[in-house]
Image (cartoon, rainbow over all chains, first blue to last red; front, side, top):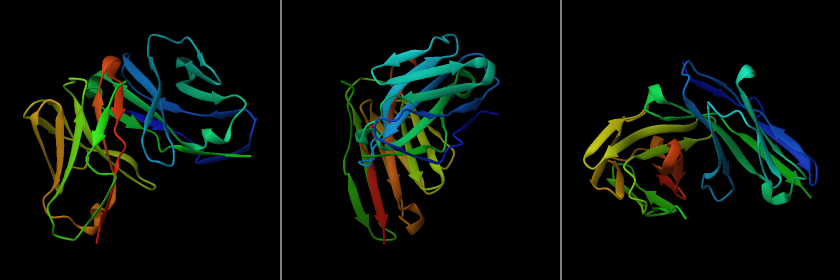
Length: 115
Length: 111
């Protein structure tokens, strides 16, 4: 059965610290997508990144980077030099071809960046 | 930019009222979704639609129905609102490479 686990419920860091948000997934499909979304206090879910199961290249976008490792079924998200504006809830999600690409969300990690 | 709009950001209704939540997307995408989000329970899929007049139940469809008369619009209907339907409702549509894009959400309070 498909599942996404975000073991860290809440993380608190001081501005400029680096922080890594963990995501572990379970799937029997060979074709699937992984996503990260950000939910600021306003409530809207903002798409950050997508990775398909055939592309294990890590990605960097500004202060954000993602590490996808199929061997450990993990898709971790690192924020470098965190800022107060990074404070939000972050969700990892999985979609599989066998489930009609419905999104399975993790429970989210609340990140608080203190000035 | 991908755009999804929801008819209200905040809504207060009384128990037993019929409630309509509207969602509109401007990308001509076929697949649209309604979720609810509750503390400790995460996001749960209520219904989704893969084309006009086509719908499928998600994980928690009880107490809800949907309408998709036009491709750009997907409505969630609470036939008789109850207090346990107080929640945050999020609409999404699916674009390229299975990516879902979400609207701003509607916080519904049922008294």
